[in-house]
Image 1 (cartoon, helix red, strand yellow):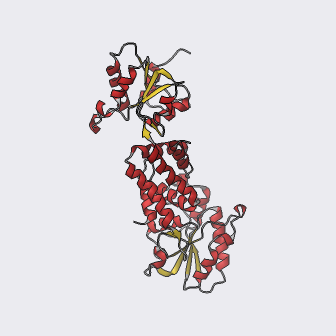
Image 2 (cartoon, chains in turn green, orange):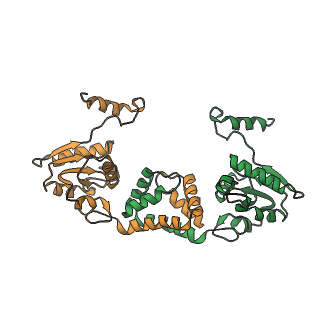
Image 3 (tube, one colour):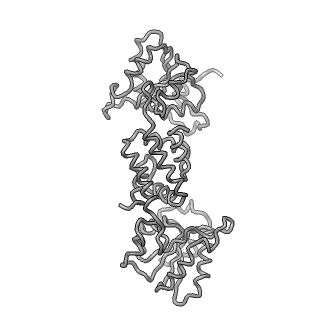
Length: 195
Length: 195
């Protein structure tokens, strides 16, 4: 296969990138300055060479332990558990959480052969015994995320002095009630607060 | 900057890729098998090393001359002139053209400092004298593409025995009249054909 066809094919394997977009990206790289295109391939190689899951929390990082685990100014009493390392960036962007993280590495999905042993739950149990007083369950508000949250809740229920919380469900800010689905509106009703 | 941030930034420089998509692609590459991610960076490096503009027509290709210029079964009497090498793939997908191509390398855009000398027009004039009887102008149906087409028409008008044609404008197949813009509908009216 020609070099151009090969690159189009590789771009098209990425999630959310169709064949048309893959073509556009390939010809863009051919039109841009070669050093700029080389910066992209170099950044991919660097990420592959440097980035590893943090031994503590499972976050993906070039540092070991990761920037959150080594930061002593973050509250060790609060732990936020997420499905994927990429969720951490979204939570950090909110600026509302200053505790530690724990990355499960996915959600429970029996049909795909993902049970509790495939997720980083054993290391979570160990870390929870080290002075954590609140576990904030921030798995996705999807069927699998809810099932994973429920499993975590049952699993840690026996730990003394640990409060387990779950991120609120409701209408997304800036969203439109008209376009919200019924389940979200129902959650927004049952979670309503006095103004 | 961390390896992850660097890669997100490089992805986000690509056209049509926002920061959210850049994050998603970066974490996808971190989650996929390393050899798959390395195939993408390798394909970029290979394209940079191998692909060059064809000396004849300006098409981007790993071969010199390119696959269309070396293919003796393509009709040398018909030449299709396009703005970019990427346009050739779209025309080839239509299956309706079996002649040769010529890539201008852009369109006339005086404000951006792109005049006739910045486009591959001198080489087009030379090639037109080599037995071409029809020049099909397939520049984009945009203001700049039309201006470039008009300039080409004037420039080649003196060549004896050369017919210059332009791709038809009209409603895109599968499109919706309701959503078509007025200029397109006007073109569709003036180009209407007896059924």
